[in-house]
Image 1 (cartoon, rainbow, N blue to C red):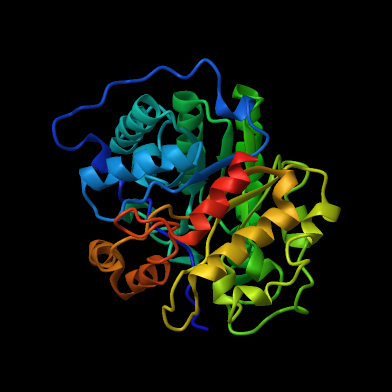
Image 2: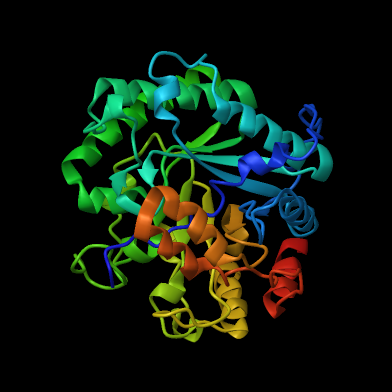
Length: 372
């Protein structure tokens, strides 16, 4: 396995599409009754349209509203904008306002946020930084300030119910153990600041379960016994961890979804009494080298999570509703990420519908689980 973090960046470039073609968007009030108050488990997807067009995004959001309750917004930190203050004028905030006005006003979808300071295609590294922060790590005062200011701006602008402060952080802990401790101190500082302003905001980081569970490694070797989770990488965040949230893409581990053990996810249930969540995940419906996948594998994957964790999830985010044009995404991302953008192709067939909206068998299973 290459040392590439298998993680989607599909949602990161679509926010600007929400305000294209005619400025059709207006600010929408927060709903009087939130979906977070009315459902045991909240279901959703990343807003990732099959094609990088406004029409495709709108159709994708329409579909999400029919098969889900929320959208997951994974945001990179606009470092340069927020070094000095949380009150900075930022294009990023305007894009989010427009996207959420469209998703909420037109389709009734509420957001879950994850602010990710790591590189979305290689989470062994911090995300690309502007020249003024070149060479920084999580101990650099200016970087810490920019992260804290951006998070507080999100809290003040959008009052999120759920707010993640990093994605798949255990991969960074493995690769950069010293700087991980700097991030941990930053997380605790920001967690305290969030609670001072918004006590009810459920704050967390996410963990890459397949790696944490020692069945795959994004480093050169596995560093533990298979199926013996590295609990210390989660528990080091306690008690400032409101939700235990994982990602899982077992098709990068197993030849078939039939190989997922019947107790693959259940160890989480006996390790914590905190709410659990699947913050992202999926299974490819076809082979994409070097991985294998079928329609039936998707069904088995969904059933495995529902059977093992279904009654205990605060939210469940499946990566894609629709298959995407991976080549279009790759070309878009290659302008800034080079060859690492090829990783996007591994996720293009994870959707529960084909790119034209035709349902796959797993969509009926998803709807059945949600409608329970």
